[in-house]
Length: 415
Ligand SMILES: *Cc1c(COP(=O)(O)O)cnc(C)c1O
Image 1 (cartoon, helix red, strand yellow):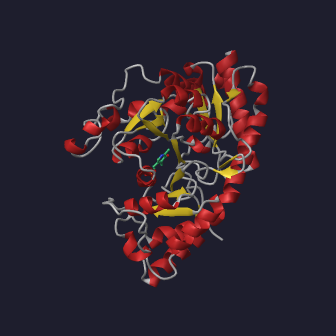
Image 2 (cartoon, rainbow, N blue to C red):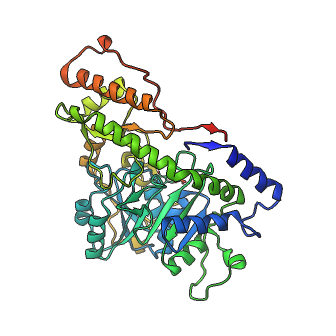
Image 3 (cartoon, rainbow, N blue to C red):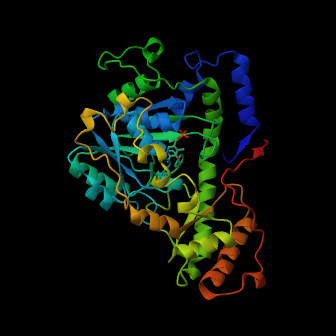
């Protein structure tokens, strides 16, 4: 969350006063948001859900992914990308990222096996995946593409909104994301049948309110319906989104421009696939060695990508332990239907990704940063480069306003 203000408070108060918090009501805020956001993304359907995790699972179920299928997921993402595959009964196969911190198209190509049905490119930190190359590999191997756009709300790839490019796209509106209702998520797709199946997964009784579609057989979905509190808050947040993303992208561009002269020393910007269009949530730099990254993190407010605590596959306990379901009989790793899937994770899996993650630092942008604050960031990165690459003594250097790294950006802006 970046900015929330009196408008959100008024919208939530109005929803509560209306006495109608169930989404299937007249003048539904959820319905209004779904239509507005589908138009914003340029897709036919958007289905709200209680979380991004559930939106991912509903997306896979909607696409018909299930037992007998493998789904390629990147080594660097929040665990829900992988656990959603298990929730659908399929097996996550973990493949490398590249220096962009997004899934490597070459690793997708190398990772395809006879049972591979889909790939989930994750637009990590709001940075766009290499969607053209991924589209080519997917077409060559007949893979479905479910974009995980949970961290990329508001961003685009070459002018198309992230999450609208693949067969479906999953979004999160939790507290940490670009647009929030505390918790929440949703699925975007152009395919009527995928949308109908996803809506059934999100609410197995949805046809009672939204009408039956005889072309789709209903099935027992778990249920993760959105409430009108979510819809009303998101309708306000959506109005703020474009301005925020523009400000973040502009700040990232300033940081990269202002530190360009440090490239020769070793502070090299990580590659980006659509810098004019993505979220610009982080200025990322690929350093020569992990020690350099660790040293930068001591000197300036930034985070080493491999040290966030929950975004590399070594931290996905349930996946690595093969605990794929609450009940052993439903555990995808044990299902006869998955007998031909690749279910083991080698000890040296994705070593390339782990090395990249420990060499990459991320400097967070913030739509509320002033020009002076951005100037301080550039100044401090310059001094840190003198320390890390040229042996300067940090105690003798005039670092300015080094605040804490602030992952959760919270601000009550009034008016
Ligand atoms: C946040 C996030 C999710 C899951 O979203 P929740 O709303 O927290 O369930 C999935 N994938 C990625 C990459 C995320 O960052």
